[in-house]
Length: 348
Length: 134
Image 1 (tube, rainbow over the protein chains, first blue to last red):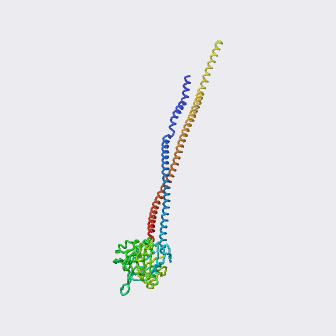
Image 2 (image 1 turned 60 degrees about the horizontal axis):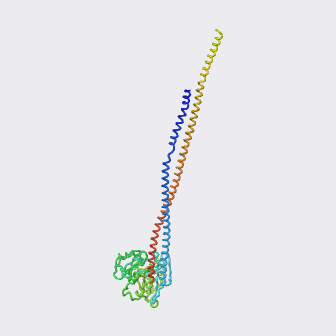
Image 3 (image 1 turned 180 degrees about the horizontal axis):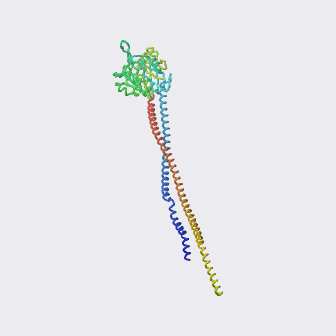
């Protein structure tokens, strides 16, 4: 019987070992599980962070979109304001133009291109007649001072200058005199002449009321009594001639030398309106049945009445000439066009 | 010898021969018991092995399943976070575009303010000119 028990114990021994192993395996089995708890905690933290970032991002996004919308609204408002300001300016310019045209009357000739707008008017006043050209320079290079035959000492009529350069409008320019050089007549311009931004001769500091009149590189009328080259160049001249006197400066009538004030003569004037439009006037004279000429005093009054803000007297008398589209519109006092040293032309 | 004695002796001999026969059968059953014992023991071992194996396999399968579920859950959450991060990236990109667009509009605004300023200056000049009209 004892042997049987021993035998039974022996038989049961493997099962006992297996049972114990199984018991232990249960503990070890848990060790085989992947410890996800820490990973879960990290994931929760990460998810939380992502949620916070999402929230912040949404806030930033909303703000950015709001700001963009505001900018767009401001942009539209500014566009409208700019448009309105432009329209008002155009209206204002238009009213000014109409006021000028009301004073000048109906144009008898008209030209408009991308470079210039030229309107020609008749000037008919008590005792004198003439022609007025109102010029808008869209391209300042359309305005030119032309030296006779492009050579110093030479002379040519305004018509010749207009035809030679292909200009549409031409008036005579600055004063000149004749001197003999090597037994031949040599035409000399008075004062200073600027062509394409350069003095054609060294600066002439003639004392007195001799004035320079021309346009700068922006096409605005410049001029005055200038005693030094520095003063002249400070005006940034593009084209210009010299004569006497200054009639209106900055909208103010200038005192006229006595010897110029009271005499009726044919006149050539270059000036400017407040809006930058050029005005060129030629008044005929010395022809009792047509026009006896005008004194500078009366002419200044007329210019002020027309609204001219800047005006300079150019060479007058027999030199005064007004050419438009190959036609001499005025009646030169010599009965024909006089050859002069400089002419002012406007290209079409 | 007497008959009785002979019988006795015969019986005695039979009795002896019977004992010796029983001892011989005992001897022939011994290995059989051992074989039977080994078979039973082997069966029990196999049974034990089988049950243990089943148990271990089941346990490991359970653990694998638990791990797989955990991993799957983590993977799902990671995927979800990846999607969220992609969405954040998209939102960031959109916001960046919005901000860039805003900057661009702001620059345009500054330019337009300058243009407006210029236009107002021009308007002021024009009105001043108009005031001086003939």
